[in-house]
Amino acid sequence: MKPADNLWQECYRLLKPFRLQVLSSAILGIIGGLSTTALLATINRAMNNSQGSDYNTLLLLFAGLCLTVLLASTLSNLIVNHAGQRMVMAMRQRLARQILLAPIEQLERFRHHRLIPILVQDVNIVSDFTLNIAPLIVAVTISLGCFAYLGYLSWQMLLVTLAIAVIGSAAQWVAYRFGSRYQNEARDGHDDLQRHYQALSNGAKELRIQRQRRHHMFEQNIKGATARICRANIRAATIFISAETFGSTLFFFVIGAALVYQTLWPSIDNTMLGGFVLVMLYMRAPLSQILNILPNISRAQVAFERITELSQQFQSPEPHLLSPDIAKTHNNDPCRNSAHFSQFQTLQLDHLQYRFPVIEGSTPFALGPISLTINASDIVFIVGENGCGKTTLIKLLLGLYTPQQGRILLDGKPVDNASQDDYRQLFTTIFSDYHLFEELIQGHDHLPEQALAYLQRMDIAHKVGIRDGAFTTTDLSTGQRKRLALVNAWLEDRDILVFDEWAADQDPAFRRVFYTEFLPDLKQLGKTIIVISHDDRYFNVADKLVQLAGGKIVENVVAV
Ligand SMILES: Nc1ncnc2c1ncn2[C@@H]1O[C@H](COP(=O)(O)OP(=O)(O)OP(=O)(O)O)[C@@H](O)[C@H]1O
Image (cartoon, rainbow, N blue to C red):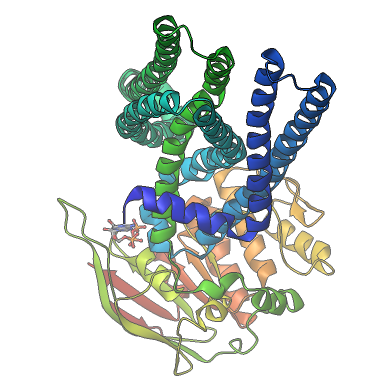
């Protein structure tokens, strides 16, 4: 499918729910445009009142048309603005929804620096475009009305004007083709720039320390990306401005031709010639408005392509994840989700296999086949060297990655797409790159006292509290933030807790408390605990030790 088809199809799909507003805006725009043409004809008649029309009638007609033009154009703009804003709101919600539902592996592959410009910049471009629809309709109608009036005045003049319009449109078409190429390049530059901005912010400390990298970042990356965007935008603007200037010149050429026509044939009707010049001069504004909107169409097309690409990549196998029914189930029972899954006895990984997609120049990592049984209330340690696949295994276990082979069984029943979200609610996980949300979503009635006890036990009660269902601050040290994440995990009260190198940031004393007190306490509460750990001195805490190497289980030891 051609990109242009995408744009109009996407436009149609987005505007469909607002078709009544768009239609009424278009009709009002057409009325406004036609009234403007009639107004021009009335002015021309008043200026050359050769037909002896009644001035009062002309005045009344003039006033009526003025009012119609004002009302119709204003209403048309207001309605389309309203529909446009609601459409953009719907689009923003749809994109957020798609991100929430997207397969995690697709999200990880898409990269943050590409995602944000789509969500912010491209959506704004589309928003600008929709706001241009009403003025475009009005401008097109006025131009068509003017052409019709020209035809009424003199068909020869109309033919000349049409011929010139065809030449002008051809120039515009060429400009559109080349201009959009540069706009596309500028848009790619924005992705790069976003990536560098992200590095500026996330790597601020490293950049301050490393002089060479700092210079490289500014001189090569930032200057390179900004210059690329600047160059592409200048080229696109040069093309569009040249095309517009060419179009305006053609106008004056036609008016000049009309004056020559009058010199050669002095008998020509002045009403006709005056009307012609008046219409041509007036028509410049709507035509140049159309020409000005053209680059926006091309920018919107580029933006739509990005948005469509995102939508296509984020097709979800679990579209029901945001359905109100699911939300209701969880609202009623916020801490004990998926009642029919809790109190499980065994969790089995049955010949699970997962392979990352091929990246040029490197062999993709493959995990499995992995077969493993985890019993309720077990403490399972997953251990192994860096890069052996521990986190990948956890992501498969949590149903975040879809295995290419094998299945997960809970009490002997396979977990499928329909039950996967319920299954995931069994878990609380603290990943090594976890995100700490400030808001707590547990039932608030019993929260504060319980939370305070946990905060005290984590030795951070003096630093952070809970107010209005949220932590008062998350500006803590790395180790303290992890402790706060553990408080959150405690409060969530799920059946299975997964810790991905949780203790790595803790001091030795607290690390010992974690392994020798917290984990046994959680086990006592009936929790199943899965720990990724490099702390071999605490491996004895585990009921089961699963050792991975090169993506495979090399040892699966049950403690005695
Ligand atoms: N998104 C990804 N795309 C491609 N390959 C990946 C991706 N994430 C991880 N890998 C590869 O998968 C392998 C296993 O990674 P994983 O994070 O599971 O290791 P790990 O055992 O948890 O390591 P560590 O102890 O360092 O945390 C690594 O070799 C890594 O390069």
